[in-house]
Image 1 (spheres, one colour):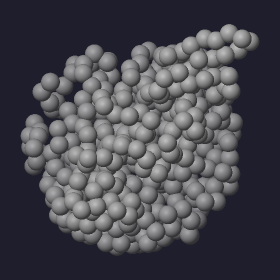
Image 2: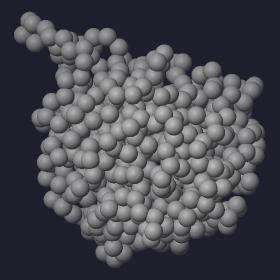
Image 3: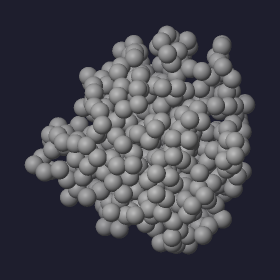
Image 4: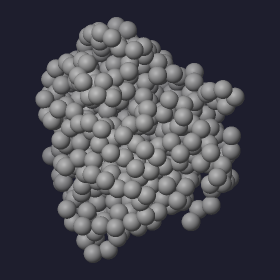
Length: 507
């Protein structure tokens, strides 16, 4: 077991203190671990400031630079005023389907789509300020399974507002293009700052697809660097980069799981890529012989001392506990520090009931909440996750399974379920269901303007609810939406994608 530099008592004290800051689960980085690459960009750019603990996320309280707004995946926007009368602000068409959560950074909305387009729009007007295409996406017909076509940028990018940089992973298909009797070949990504592009019928695949990490300038979309980041030995045809990127500790952390349908010999990975590309990439692989992907939309969650927590989906074994359905704490350098696995993990594997279908949620007092497709939620001790069957508490969250995301705020955990949005009242190491929204498949929730917001995936409706009573405060029809659609919010705006549009609302 990896022995972290920060001791358990110190780590828990720090965790508890930070959770008290409006439920934003973040860390201060006064300590660093040996052999951490020296870079010009560090995780201090995504931390919180309060009282005598001074770091720099406090300067970004009007931004949403990463999935759920913070590296601790708080999902709480503290920059917008109490929403009294939310109203539509602007819309703009999208070039391709968007599975990534929008980002709001430096007065820009950043969208990344499945056509491998990254687009910046002015937050106040919706006007496009720049767009860049990072290469040809991969046709769904060329993959052995899956439900995204084409497949390009799926995982939510991450930004560093202070350095003016954006990191994004594109799934790229090298092609040869035939036109007018001649052909040209492209075996690498060729980013172009132009109108958003889609796959052309004249482009023929040339070689296997690959995942490329790009560093872009937030000011104009210029490509500042790129690197192939497929894990060694992994098959890119069956590895999907769905989970959000996390920027912390001088690394960009990149999770991998399988395609919809669990086809092929895929594995769960978490890659740590130095932001300057000058040090070796680090890799954590889930211990299952196959499967056990890290695929939930939130990706890796940062907790005390810069450590990370990830949750895996079903493994392949139906007779032994194999590392599937497991919550794992990792050091900054991806050394395993502890795990939790439900005692019925083999049965969860057999029935495809992933524990890792939602993100781990850090709770006050040094606890972690997690819920999965079985519909059961667990509370764990963050300093000692409990191994097999070592939960502090378990209870039913929803009958049709939790999937998508979960957040904590003000004594409640809000969980997206296939049946509804569910609010759990937390009492230290126990919980009970406080309310359920009207029936419908809920997308990952956020809190902004004093309301809890989520998208009903079935009806394509954006709902704003009173977080204590579930009373509907606002609702807007969005049109057709993709799985796990989730809004972002900052500076008095709420932004969401639906109906072929990016749509912004005034709060």
